[in-house]
Length: 305
Image 1 (cartoon, rainbow, N blue to C red):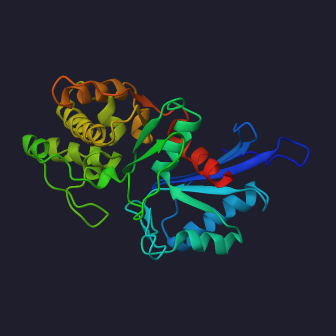
Image 2: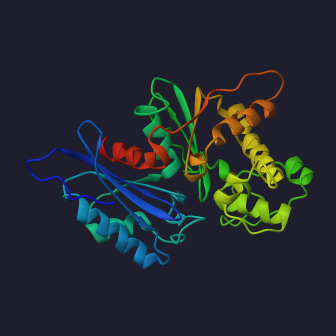
Image 3: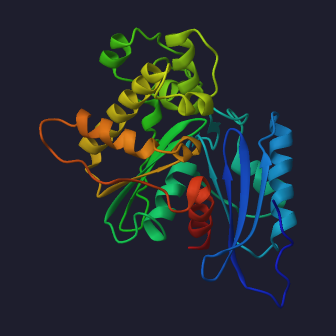
């Protein structure tokens, strides 16, 4: 759904953010109180030229040239050459930020979508008031981010938070007799290939021989596909346990399409408690207050700083 941009006499536009993922692009325009003024969502194009054109059109249709614009996108930017590595949309090997800037004649802020989610939830959402906020997106892909005191730490490689491309637990994969799946990053056995939306569907095919959507699996998870859901929860919990052991965050915020599954958070919380070492506690694991598009607000906030 889209709405007309605010007029010159209407609410003041402070910034705009785009959430770019494997299946959709969502643009949000924010006022000075960081409330959403307008929102527009389109499907992610299948070709790179169409992708650049679609993003440029969204920006030109919704904001004036003097409004800061941030893009939170799945994948990574190589700081050495500015090229994208994206497992879930058609930008790998291209200098997407530069091409968007050229198409819009703007200086757009471009950050990873998971880091944008962490920033949004740390400043405005479920992580507000906490020192260390970790975020994990469970959607078309899997990734994460961390904000400390409302700021994103920046390292020299730009790869921090790519938990989805750590190896899945060999013990769990062997226990369920699962194959080792190839990943869009070029490696095999990444946890993303098991616990993303497409990964959940791969689990169903491997364990039941049936092609099912993630929605169908979630709906039937207490019946004949309970093993599929159990494998997904075990692999997801193991990834979150590794995150806890590495960062020891105050809170973990989950976003992405799979976070919308009713009851998912309770199942993941129970599995993560079981996966934790010894009798040690785990931090709260909560849903993003900004929903699965919270990253658009985080990208806008980053652009406005």
